[in-house]
Amino acid sequence: MIKKIHHIAIAVRDVEKAAVFYEKILGLKLGGVEEVAGMDVKVGFIQIGETRIELVQPLDPASGVAKFIEKKGEGIHHICYEVEDTAAALRAFEERGAKLIDKTPRIGAHHTKVGFVHPKSTGGVLTEICESS
Image (cartoon, rainbow, N blue to C red; front, side, top):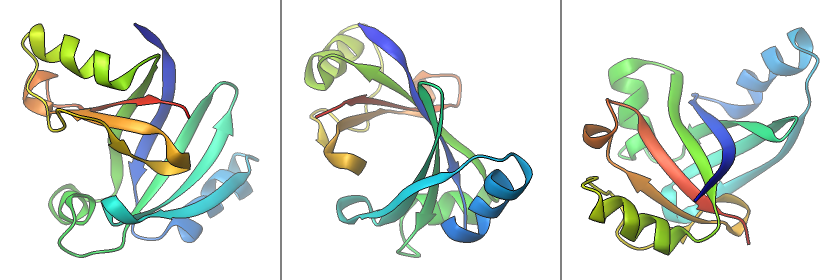
């Protein structure tokens, strides 16, 4: 069901400022930056092999990412796994006892179908699954 790690998301106050470390120190390149309106965030992806680092900047001070930064500071926010079918994966996870944030997929960055599993079911790690469009 899970194909690979799609990305590791890092909550940041400013995507462009955070990207300086990855570009200048690590020699990586910030791909595109886009706003994901339904989630009130701005994201930038840095490709590393088949996996990405996703820099996530809140656009709304009341958003979940803004609250995360306020409570915990900048840092790892979630891990995303790529699946064949997000809706089917969410149903299967719930049937196996996971507490879901999303019972049906929503649209994420790059028009992917995404869903989140609550950290209470995962040992404290916010878990996203995505299906590339």
